[in-house]
Length: 83
Image (cartoon, rainbow, N blue to C red):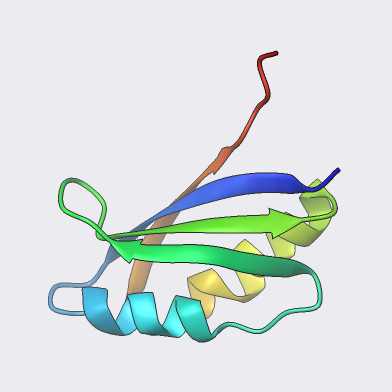
């Protein structure tokens, strides 16, 4: 079963659109970008990722999302199934 995580992204001022587009364009064999949305509030962009395991998910965040121009900080929230 695939793991899912929401990545909450803080972007530099004026960079939210570019960050969202950069995250959407990420290509990885480790994980799939399910969705990317620009949002209001304390975060500027929220991405939903899916991967086979936690290590692959972590690599996409650190080697992919955090390297996108304009990304200042990320917070990763793992999806849990409570049933």
